[in-house]
Length: 193
Ligand code: SF4
Image (cartoon, rainbow, N blue to C red; front, side, top):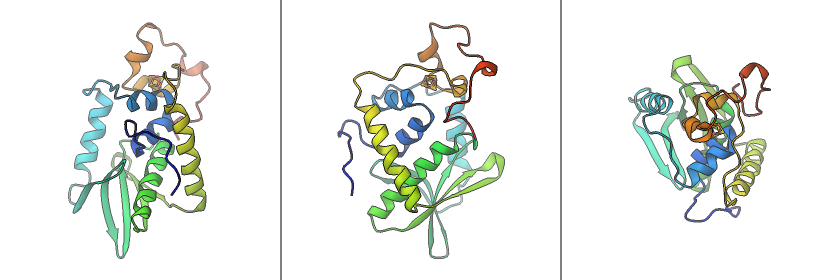
């Protein structure tokens, strides 16, 4: 198992990887327990969908170190890690999150595949922890570690996702104008797919 460059205060989690893939600043803020408004509309909807969409499945919210799996489903002998999202826009981050869960299960001797399910869009995206997936995961873990080691958060840098981010007011309170109108802003590499 690779060395994990995280202290016990800032453990490596799938959720941090997800946030890092969207915006490294948000991952740093979450890692320091700086949490956005709990009643933020987007967060609320995401939680509601996650709790209700697959309520008939027998195994829900399985916890492993740094991993809180929404649903563990089965298909014959296969184990399926299910991550429920409210939209497929942030699929890069969700893929990383699921890869991390598969990696954690593998450490416990459980071979599984993953699925990102988007009930609103009736979408399922399959994820496999193959060689490419594992290499991508380990590279991302190292990059996230470098961000979390910083004594202060990366500066705010406007991406279209900021508009729906729960840290919007925290990052842009001094800037009442949209700092980068979407039409003039090149798509971020983490932007919606
Ligand atoms: S508002 Fe934008 S810059 Fe700030 S944490 Fe969210 S995505 Fe990142």
